[in-house]
Image 1 (cartoon, rainbow, N blue to C red):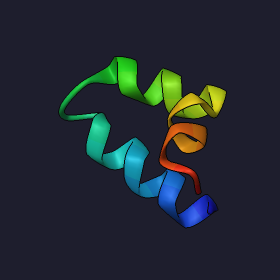
Image 2: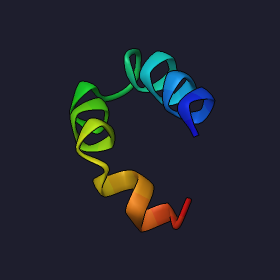
Image 3: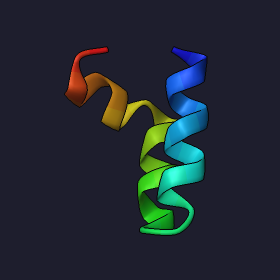
Image 4: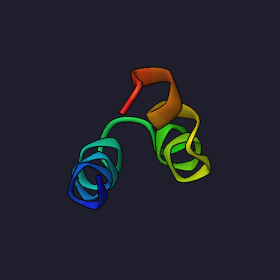
Length: 34
């Protein structure tokens, strides 16, 4: 789970910083069902 978050941080950093914030809040993780 933490590895996935690390990938999201690196990936979203160059795409959409807002996605990182959502992921940190667990919104994205809950939506994906992980």
